[in-house]
Length: 98
Image (cartoon, rainbow, N blue to C red; front, side):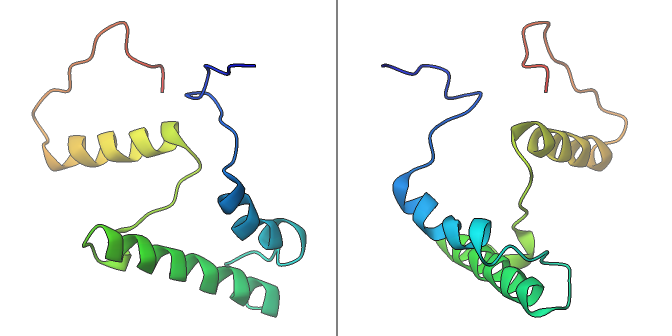
C-alpha cells in the first residue's frame, strides 16, 4: 500500500516508537505531578527540550511542545499578531482550516 495522507497522520518511526514506548506503557506519569512517575516524565521532557535546543542553537526555554499542527499554527499566529498590533494578517480561502 502507498499511503499519501501524511499531513493528517503518519506512521511512527520505529526509533521514535522504541523511545516513547516506556512512557506509553510503564512510565506514564503526568509531568506536572510531584510523584515519581511524574518527575520521571518531566525529566524526559526537559531532556528532550534541551536536546532540541542544542540542535537548533536555541535556549531550552524557547522550545515548546504542542499537541499538533493546528495548535502550533495558532500559537505562532497569535504571537505574531500580538507583536505586530495594528497590522493585518491576510490569508486566502484555500488555506488549511487550522
